[in-house]
Length: 459
Image (tube, rainbow, N blue to C red; front, side, top):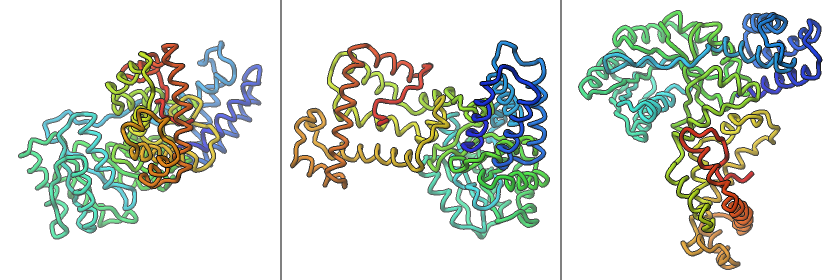
């Protein structure tokens, strides 16, 4: 997300670094480029005008430290204004009420609403420790009801059944009664979507809202629709008291205009970002962290939080102790580290959070290929015997053919893996000798400040 805007803003800032000081002329030149960058990112024109005017005024004002060079001054001003436009801080869900807290999900068809219901239920269950129930009041699309049932089973949350012969209001009120009986903390209600905003949709969802009085009414919107996302949010907000927005499909949105426009235009906070198709691909929206990503400064706080949530700390400690004691790094260790890496999610999202990596010029499709290569390596190692994993030197011609056949790969894939492993083995040996692994793994554990890649990452 924000790749185009990030590239252009960073290029503008880089050119200012060569200036001795900020003047009206070089600020005017820079602001023209910022204006173009924002418009190309599909940020609404009123937002662009206000943003550029504010940045220009502050860059020439006295509220920036004189000890900063021109590039640093602009970074500070642009960062602060990006944060201000996107909402200052994370606006968390308001669930502090007598349970069950009802969350009503609204949005147009195709925005990923039903999938987001599953993601949010999983987020609340795993991150917040909530007992969650979900139900679908989409009586026009039976497939949506079945989709939510399957999703709820996959994440082990309670599903209240419904069917197309019921009214949306009856489904919602019956689900609320069931949530009270089962002592659920949160009830999430999916609603019907349309291809466009229409009166029938609004009347129905208003009736559902009145019947269950939700504590949160969230608008689910596809970030790739740009200005249409802002317009539809405004239309829904006129019909419903929206409390926030969830932006979906942000991993496929290179512009990011919706994220920059929504809060300023609608006044509604963005609460979450859908960052991948996986069930755990939902991330709390922190304006300051997103601004840092746009300016190529990374987002180490989110990265550390994800590491604490997903990485197996005991496995990391076991591995660190093994390397420290000088015990050999084998193929089972290599497989374990790749699995740890995969738990951190999409590689492109991971790189986006590393300082200086978000705007690296990586060939199109390269990161997807990297993910595929990692998973292929796991399959190859799974096809080996315990002895082969422990003693890779045993893997000669006939064994390589058997392993390739067993993993559905080619012999050259097995050869490539063994070559990568040998290089990694040498690196692990050096780390063990110098005590570097202990520091690396400590940095990746809870409370650590590091952002080091797990050893299985084939860069």
